[in-house]
Image (cartoon, rainbow, N blue to C red):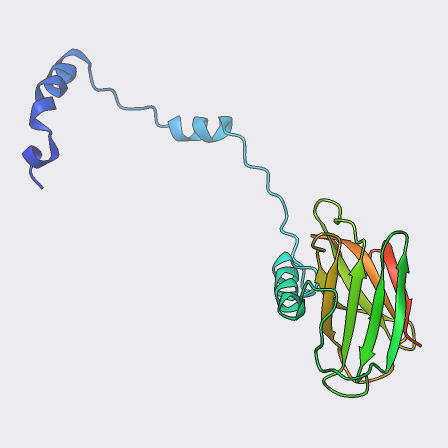
Amino acid sequence: MSDELMGIPEHRDTVERLERGVARVKPPDDLFDRIVAETQPARVIPLRRRFTAWTSPVAAAAVAAAAAVLITVAVTRDDGLGDPVRRAAITGSNVRGTAALYRPDERDGLVVLDLDRVPDPPRNNYYEIWISRPGGRKVPIGAFTPENGKAHLELPLPTPGKYLSIDISVEEEDGPPDHSGRSIAAARLA
């Protein structure tokens, strides 16, 4: 590209005057070393990788998105599910509702929760639904945020089998994958 296209001719006179008035001096050989010595290295923060899918915010968002497909914010609805195998009251400090278990011994087993008076979760937290089997191990099956204090959730059961209880906990968005120990409500299914 020519000097004219770059707009240099209009500044050539200024550059020539500067070159005549200021002598060119070679920078000292140790200039780079002095700059490096005076520069503070950046503080490195170790990356905290989480290999468990339930702990990753991206995985939590994916779980929430999958749960959202099954969540309908309506208190009553005829889904053609038939009669539940078990119905139980969900109770907590303020939360009220019901849990209904459908086809727990089949691959398409489902638990339906109708919740009322659910407070908004604390900032940077969400609610997670846990279900337990004999042996006491709790398994997360869905996450939600209430709308106007209500939620209707239809959550697939992880595998066919016997289920003992439902638990609703408050979980931190970047928290560990285990149950936080902060339950707001529960229901016994057996």
